[in-house]
Image (tube, rainbow, N blue to C red; front, side):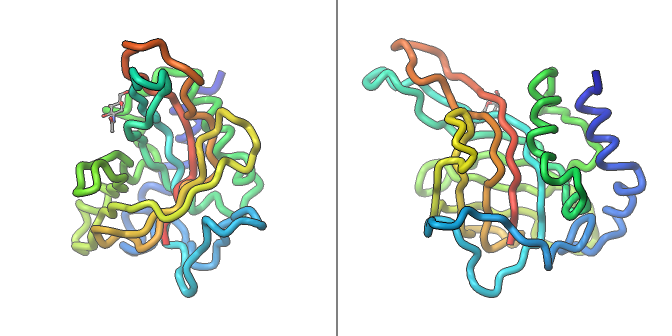
Amino acid sequence: MISVMNMLSALFSVATLSQLVAASPVQYGCPTQNDVLQLPPSQSQLYVPPGEKPSHIVLGLGVQNYTCSPTTGLYVSAGARAALYDISCQYGTPAFATITQDAFVQFNDEDFNLDSPPTAGLVGSYYFTTTESGISPEWDFFSYSSGSSGFPSFVIGSEVGRIPAPTGFPQDIDWVQWTNIDGGLARTMFQVQTKSGQPPAYCPAGSPDISVKYAAQYWLF
Ligand SMILES: *[C@@H]1O[C@H](CO)[C@@H](O)[C@H](O)[C@H]1NC(C)=O
């Protein structure tokens, strides 16, 4: 079986890594300005604000966290954490159509330590941070920080739209749109092409917190 590390290494060759270092601070890997985010028709929750262009396309591999509500017996979202991999150079290739699913299958089969994820193609992390409104998602492109550009390397988002995954699979988490409330990395962020991540339907009272593996694409504009 191909390990997730080998798969990521194949997707993100060593040449790609050195290209990343040489790339402009705004666009990582390959230019994304003309790439098109596919959103389902017949919905008004998710839309690209006029004039905004994609600046980053990344694959998130990680966990969605849940707490068991003792009153409802349902799992409640408690944030998430993921490693982010640049997939801008895979856009437009045949592999792109199934990249999230393929990566998830490998990732789901293996121990994957979020404290030390495979480094080929790794550009940052996704996690939740405490804000005035509770906890908010943050995309932290730490790989930028070592550059000399001083380009702001993170963005924190506030949710502006959400739809159930259009795959129709109930185990896939929602597609979501956020707008920037802090940081200079992007103005608008999307979670799309989600695979898995939903909790079990019910939890017996007193159940411990759980983390459910998922994969998704994050498109930053
Ligand atoms: C989610 O759980 C993982 C461990 O499974 C942990 O590393 C991470 O900090 C948690 N994130 C949040 C926002 O609770």
